[in-house]
Image 1 (cartoon, each protein chain N blue to C red):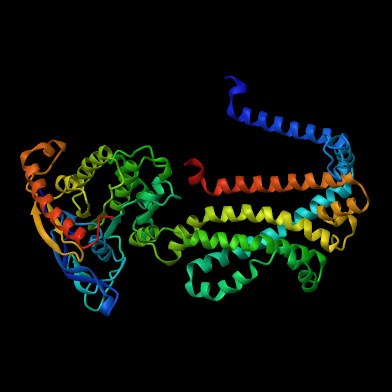
Image 2: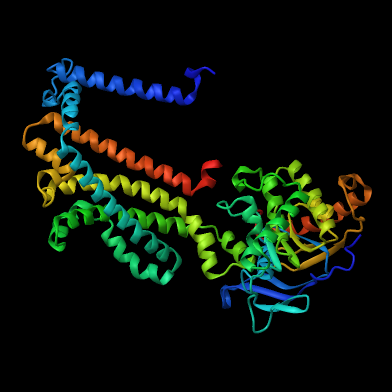
Length: 278
Length: 270
């Protein structure tokens, strides 16, 4: 199942290059990278540590510039020739590796932050929607808590609700579940899919965890070692909706084998190049 | 519920035991001429706590004693408030703006190591009244601590919070008000608590050196009270003054701690 006629969220990364420094000292982080993500797709990205995946994500989010190429969202050029850096915006919200909920705000105020900043609706309306989305995500009852009072898994779910409150076209995930234990992580995966089934937003998801990548994604892009460029794209032809039963299916195992062979090749190359796993 | 097992009761009980034991030891030491057989020079001059207590009870009815409290407290509050009022904005400015940091930081770093008491003579020369000089010295005591804490706190804000806020549509003033300011509050609280401790240290010394202000013996503050007692040979009163400062400093710190907890509820509940 792919989202039915999703309205927006078509993301094109066209021939993007990002180098740090100039001249002799220039280091390429992203090398002629092109990825086309249709609206409503969950696109998973894996690659060796430090290969430049996060650089690419940050360029989409507008946290830094690109050297050349173009990133287009729904026909609108975010960055490209003449405009090296995209403006950060609520259409592309990032869910960070270690989480970025504001510790000084209650959960409810965190969730309401985006719409309040954008002044998109009345205070009442925003709060009602926040409560509704939180209830859907099984977060009712922790509105008045501070993030530090929640478990790390709950914090991740709050952060995704906070992101969805902005009605983003694309959700950008930067290894959001890396710090979680594997049991919590598997619960998070099902919870994320449930959320996506309700609101099929485009997702650009960086991870190191192949099981996570294949369980969640429609497609898996395997990146080369630094500088990063798509090495292979694996279509994950396991039908949605998925649950944890698919983990033991032969198709899942076959995809895992295929993906890990590709990733391993790159990891070994990165290791040989002295850029060992950090 | 067993009242004795309640941890708070237990803590209070232990504090009491410790204080009583300390007073007892002091009393015995002061009464035994040679400090339990070990001859410690001058220790015989320290008045026993019973005499101090008697002097204290007598002083409680003396308006001059209370005026010393008020005078010192006002100076502390004046210096401290001014240090907060100037230090917090300056700290935020230095943390947020690289150019400002490059311009102001060298001056700040040059002035910072100067002990507040080294400012006393200059302060007496610069300021028209004794009162202002003492308040200025207490200001100097708290100021640098507060500025440096604010710079440190605001400078250490995780870049992810800025990125998240900007991605969700916050700009300029809103980023400052909703990210920078609340993220710096814990550092402000710490700076205030440390700064408050320093102002009490400084005000007493400044009062001793400057001779307690223009209003004579009664308006001289706690520092002058101690100095005056020393000159007059009222040793019990010296100790009363010392303990009074201890109580005043503790009360101010406790008040700040409670205020700090109130403005950082997310740290208290975590």
